[in-house]
Image 1 (cartoon, helix red, strand yellow):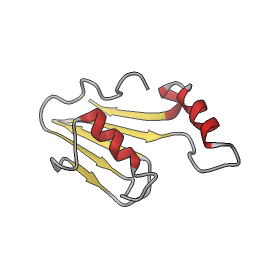
Image 2 (cartoon, helix red, strand yellow):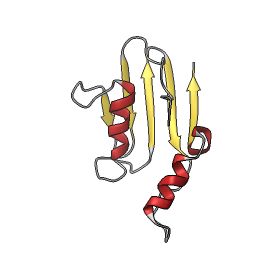
Image 3 (cartoon, one colour):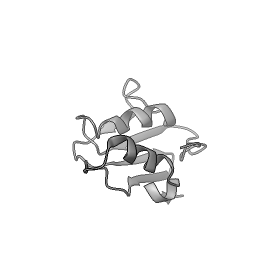
Amino acid sequence: MKDSLIKGFFEKEKKAIVKTGTKPPISCIIDGIQCTSGCTLGKGNIEVLDQQIPEALFISDKKQLTIKLKINMEPTNRAIEEMAIEIYNMAPQDIFEISKNF
């Protein structure tokens, strides 16, 4: 993905609530959130819920943004590399469901 989906979203206090849990591979989403949002586990502004759902809620001031994974990432008979290339070539709106409350 070339641009951050939440670029410019945060103005003041910010928080991310991630529903992945802490077990890989689904928890790797937390790494991406730390790289793109400025929220980190070290700063304590990421809350991880053990729901095994690829979904995150971002909160800043009175704004909320929810990002859900649309596509099925379960292993199939296809090679991992083939699936990765297919996803890389998809448009963000085909991969994610984004809901804004602002």
